[in-house]
Amino acid sequence: MYNKMSSQNTEVDVILIGAGIMSATLGFMLKELQPDLKIELFERLEVMAAESSDAMNNAGTGHSAFCELNYTPQLPDGSVDISKAIKIADQFEISKQFWAYLIDQQYIKDPKTFITTVPHISFVWGDENVSYLKKRYEALSKNHFFSDMQYSEDPAVLNSWMPLVMHGRNPDEKVSANKMDIGTDVNFGALTKDLLTAAQNKSDFNVHLNHDVTNVKRCKGGWQVTVKDKVGGGKHKVTAKFVFVGAGGGALPLLQKSGIPESKGFGGFPVSGQWLVCNNPEIIKQHQAKVYGKASVGSPPMSVPHLDTRNINGKRSLLFGPYAGFSTRFLKRGSLWDLFGSIKLNNLRPLMAAGIDNIPLTRYLISEVMQSQDDRLKSLRDYYPEARKEDWELEIAGQRVQVIKADPKRGGVLEFGTEVVTAADGSIAALLGASPGASTSVPIMIQLIERCFKAQAKTPEWQDKLKAMIPSYGQSLAKDAALSREVRDRTSKALGLV
Picture 1 (cartoon, rainbow, N blue to C red):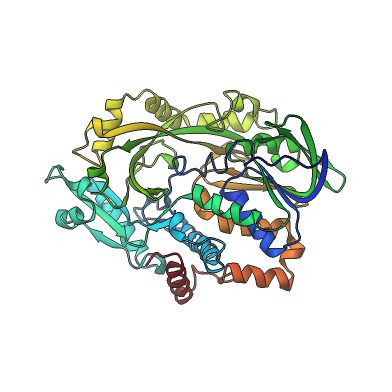
Picture 2 (picture 1 turned 180 degrees about the vertical axis):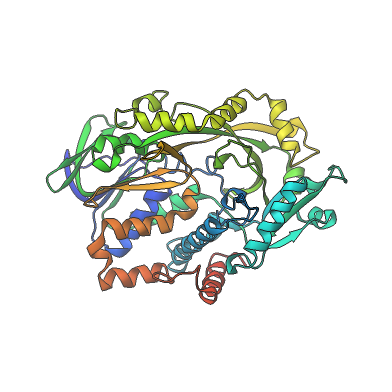
């Protein structure tokens, strides 16, 4: 789809940069909240959701902290901190409410195009890890978000949960797992396309593919965005009262070009990924779960190993990985100069300080880059002991840019979450970072709306519409177990997860 700009100078209300899940979510919400808004979306590639939101570039796990062990760290006293897990579970339930609204209002006809039920399992081996996982289970299962969690050290039970993982394993090896049957697989690429298709059916919402935003600068009444038409040629100047930069790894350079004080001190550290993808249908049908393990020391959260059932465009797949790598590109289809171009005087110290603090990560990435196919197969056999080389092919996964930010004590720190950077007047915002990203797109965009559209968000009209889209809006699911169960039951039914 190629939509040529209608004129050289255009004035609109909102400009969205990047056709990914974040821009799609924000744009659709804004049109629901205020239908007369004029919104233009610009995407540099020829298709929507081709970078971080694409199914093969994204882990696809509906990140609800059911199986991701990096969200439940063990503290020095041996206890397990579940606070981050509760926060992420809460956020995912908010996302599900919005997606259920899309189904209820028939903006999207069939939820199975983007979300399906896949059990989430955490799996470990060795005395120390088994002890940790049991403590994790005991802590989580007391919370209403995780009350249905199962735990077992019985090989027969574990075999029924994940036969590929257990077949051929040393019977004397101590293993354990916890399991949540209500886990999900989410195709965020499909969801993005569904959202943007529905949005374009509304008036004054236009998506322009093959349009590269090259500059963002302040102007009277808002922002002027320079857009290069990669097909028709020429450049266009578009002005807007509000700009959202949701361009994945491409967000940092555009944020820097805006010149807002809030952008100072931010840098990015790119991490690439690869998957082993199973090509044997007989093996694929034997595994129906997302089995997550513990990350290697020094590895980023996106590199947590998992043997992963995926439902991509109606076809069941089986992936293992991701294997981390390093590239100076900020986007999978970016430039090798991306990293160097992002280095500025205001972020040089944070970049250097974060680099010194994260030497183990550097060593880890070097070791991953140097891996052979046999090395990758060895890692796979930790989770699937009978894996054969001929049943797996290597595919390139997505590119992630971890946030580096200034820190008064350490100079700079490497963050593994997401960061929304907004101007003081709320007229421009950019999303930086990666995990858990797409799974928490809805609460992140709600927070952005409350921050950047303060006056409108407080009006009765917007409040009522926010509560229609998110029935629990203004209430805490984390603190209200009865409400949480009611919401989960309703959304699960709407999304076909029961």
